[in-house]
Amino acid sequence: MNAPVTLYHRSNDVQRQDAKDILDEYSKVIKWRKDGRDSLLDIGCGSGDVMIDFILPIMPKNFSKLMGVDIAEDMVKHAKLLYQRPKISFDKCNIAGDIKAILVDHSEGFDHVTSFYCLHWEWNQKKAIKNIFDLLKHDGDCLLVFLAKHPIFDVYKKLSQNNKWAPFMEDVDRFISPYHHRENPAADFNELLKSTGFTTYNVKLVDKTYVYGGLNTLKRNVSAINPFLVNMSPNEREEFFEDYIKTIIHMNISQKDEDENDYKFISSYKLLVAYARK
Ligand SMILES: C[S@@+](CC[C@H](N)C(=O)[O-])C[C@H]1O[C@@H](n2cnc3c(N)ncnc32)[C@H](O)[C@@H]1O
Image (cartoon, rainbow, N blue to C red; front, side, top):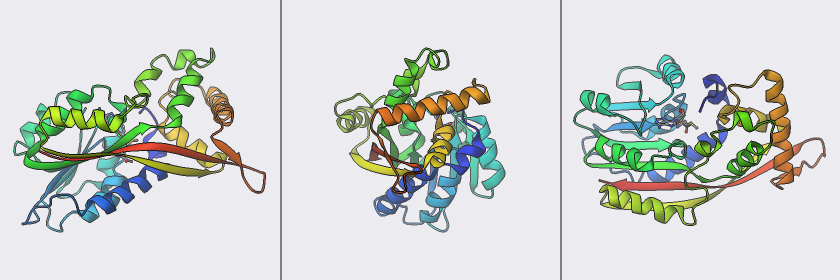
């Protein structure tokens, strides 16, 4: 994701709200163990706050293990520093890479796997889902939530066609959800779960809207998740943000606030929510 971890930690209101809503609903669907000794692996845990604030509270009191993994070293370090304690751990792992190290240390597998706002970053969907399958116990289940479609992806594409920003955005397509241009993301993901070997699966595309109250809020959130800023100077970042806003206004996804002093940004997007059992 390449954004400063502390900025992500302070600017992930949308992700937190979505995780909370979905976990409220699925805490009753997840197949908890009778003895309450559940183990859970959260993939793409980022700075760790969603796992601690929303996943930990729905786990049985005497759970056996809660582990977060992320591809980004700085995210893992930050999460360890803030949240590691007995039964709760964090480690580095690319979910579409080699998962042997995790399987060696946790050979029995996990009762549950969760993932919030991560899998749209991964183009090797087949490998990621196969790894999730392999990380689960024989009767384990998973709850996977990620962006299928979002106007931010169109903004990225548009800005990458601007000569000024093209050099910073050569790999733009890698940062657009693999499902953004699909006609039926839910059907495609359903098929992937089935072909991987999951026996029960329920996939839905959920319409969501988030209203960013003002330029500053939008700026913080955009900066926190923007993968193209790393090689830009502070001035370039400011200019990039100005062009970003102009593009949003041009694409008609903003409206002037009532007092006319600021913009309100309305972002309508589609989340893919999948629950599956092995
Ligand atoms: C937007 S953050 C979401 C963090 C947290 N789950 C939340 O809901 O706030 C996405 C995280 O996924 C991680 N990520 C991206 N690709 C990954 C991969 N292939 N394997 C593991 N983590 C990955 C990123 O490093 C980032 O920390």
